[in-house]
Image 1 (cartoon, helix red, strand yellow):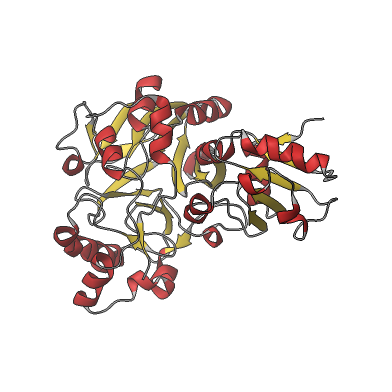
Image 2 (cartoon, rainbow, N blue to C red):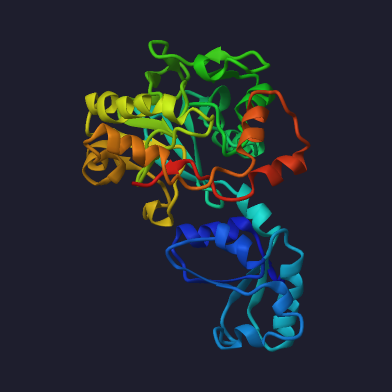
Length: 376
């Protein structure tokens, strides 16, 4: 009987809100920065070196017949701690294969809706990093939006659905994770789309993503309509799908709004951000379902594991949309911001094609939470 569980198995538990006890044996500073979270997840942090001479440090918090999943950075230390727990009589101790590094890369697909003429919309939830990407499927064709670098996941999913990927789209130049959009387009023979204003320094060819130039998926009525919505970046472009769903990229989230500072242009882009959120989006239907590119809090996950909200409801309850005074808004999005994403500048350079780190380096660059939001 295996004493390890996969990230896929753990993700299903998190999404299904199953009671789960985790022992995280990384150093406390690493744990405090970034951890596995879920509505029904209980987590204990006890650094590995505190357990080498025995498990007394956690004995008061865990019953020996309780299931416990041990997690470390890469999957090595957790196996040793699991064995120590077994020796001490913990009969249901498991380790997470690949540790937090593997958890960071797991994508959990969730169906959002059926679209016109038999089309479908899927959201891919990157539970370990809060990234959200999308696949629009129609008439045996697909478009992928804001793809993560783990392109094989999208390719396998498309194969399972019997569709070919003909478009990949980035709503903006990402700074928190390495985009898989260009690589996925190369792998599948598709077209990679990026907003011109975010592409001034890129080193590769792309198709312009611009308002007024819709993208058709398949030969059906599924239209992807770009809507210019700057503020997080100067090129940020939202996507309206099927006149029902608004993919907001990193401009608007369920409980927060996008930050304008990741390219060092906070003061320049504040006005754009406010214009998008307080004017441009206000002109759209309240009944649009907002589908962002990230989430920050585990309680943003719905009962089905998806992250979404009605636009009109966000204008009622998202504190980032409640700041009437323009100067107060400017202060909120430029002062006392959370730390910027790890290696955000190198990630931007990679997404421009100016750097091409080895795969292992790319994994290291992305470790940690996304930190793309401003919380009012």
